[in-house]
Length: 364
Image (cartoon, rainbow, N blue to C red):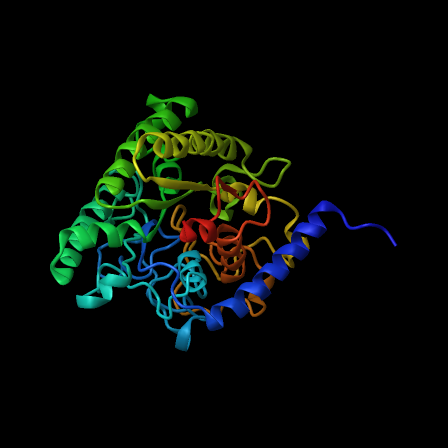
């Protein structure tokens, strides 16, 4: 009998991790007092529903595998990565979207994610309204003030927030709906990919420092995935021999390469800072068939409007969604989200997270 390959071993480890964590969830109490989520459509859970934008998905078949088959505004057939991480952290309820979060429920956290948003304010404006990262930070500032009012003690609130988990995943739209849309944005004609990565990181550093100043101490910064493998990008630019658009993935890698030094800088120079980097590219790499994925086209019938890439309303999706990587032309299925969330929370490889995973961060 031939020995297992490293990829097979990692796949087996992931399966065992998922089973172990699912058992853990049943009996767990929240490991941290609250969980705050910042990002784009990968974590949006309804903030865009009432905005004037193409980047909203509060219609079937979205949510076909969610609670009561409800289309909540999640860009997925079921749970997104933030939902699953929240369960791993022990929260019984989903973190509410900022758009509807009210009263004492904000004490356990808020989701500010907004489809189409980016590090740069203009990113995604081709889709319509959205809450950019700067706007999400402003909204969080309002939440922090409200928490202070509810608790009635500024010192206690500061200590309380320092124990919470914050996840931030920004940058995808700064490429998809900015840099690689030269007919609408000047960035690709102004900056080389190297220069653009530097510009993004410079602004991102300032924004994350604002989050720190608002009280965030345990912050997981998510890198970007293999954007060049998204069906919509492949349709737009044409696949290379890899099956993806290599130039796009190379440009995104320049951004990702700057995140670990950013984390090191914050941890070294900001008192009590505990920032970590989640390496989504590593998590998404490898042979997907070893994890049970065999279909690389979208599960739903995606829009023919170039650049939109979302499911056409009310058309039935594929039936065996567990073997599909992509739900629509941009976003992963719940099955992929489950792996991403699992390895972000508890790393299956030393390359998945740095200098620790979310599980360890919660315990610090």
